[in-house]
Image 1 (cartoon, rainbow, N blue to C red):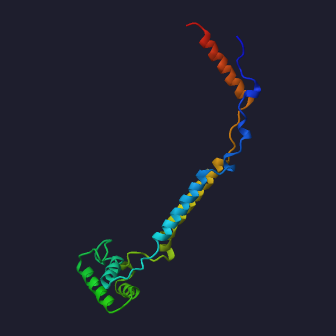
Image 2 (cartoon, helix red, strand yellow; image 1 turned 135 degrees about the horizontal axis):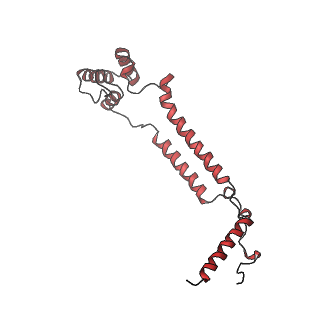
Length: 183
């Protein structure tokens, strides 16, 4: 039987001669950058305050939504039907009509019922961690993934060795011998 192996010059070029994948920036990189910009713009637009003028009724309801009913369990003053919530809503309406600011009304109610009346905790001290920690963890996780992906991308491609070529040639010869044998 004759050796049907191709001459050395006809072989495919070594993978080491191609530029590493991280050296070229294809359209995928620009798509990721564009997607990041779109997300950033959406976040900025979504977090802008609503500048439309509100009526006194809207202000009173929005304020009642941020306060917790003193007798109910985790229910806002706006949602509760408890007698004390009805009184607080009436007090809020009276103070809004008299021209007090939201902060003045909130301070009055905190002075009367304590800090527990506020549904949204202050972003200071230990309660500040409730606001900051999820964001920090999200950013750290994203950075860790980014570093891992970069490291995986930088790995050099595995090259074909002469031993690998010999094994493939040996397997081809054995396959040809099996095909040539009569069944």
